[in-house]
Image 1 (cartoon, rainbow, N blue to C red):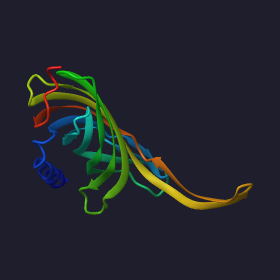
Image 2 (image 1 turned 120 degrees about the vertical axis):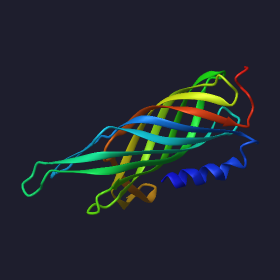
Image 3 (image 1 turned 60 degrees about the vertical axis):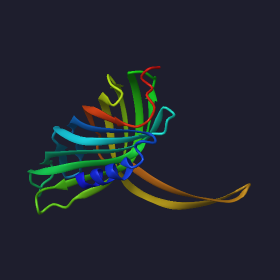
Image 4 (image 1 turned 30 degrees about the vertical axis):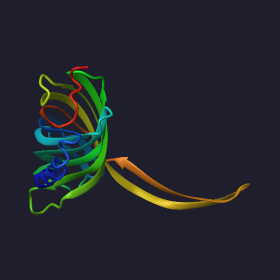
Length: 212
């Protein structure tokens, strides 16, 4: 997953001098979450995480960003049904997201809000377990402080919602306006994860808005 972040980084650096690009290595504390199954409960332990955020500023107080967050932690399954056993294993949690952000205010100190979609990969290190991919939506709220034009600091909190598609179907009905058809898909969040963290922002190109 780290290779994907590096590839994306170099792909946009060629345009860095035309618009503002913020590259932020960051660390955070990831809250693992819990999943309740019929057979038992699966708990992912809280753990320190690392990641990178690459934001491309459109020059209108916001832009698009790529996020990667990874953590190596433990998952514990507590069986509650006969025939199942308690197990514990290492698992790598990888969040890969792309979305948009909006700065709140101008100057050296400002807030921001963002929303993104992507995937979460639960990758057990044990050979007997398979990786699990889930579509994920996320939201973030934080603050940025730029003591220098090209260097800043960031504090943030995020929420990750890995989703599971429960099913779908096509429905049709006849009313006064004729035949009406539609498509429905139901989803639900399998667990809720979040993190609190900080990062160092390296800014390339763009206009200096800190003097306003």
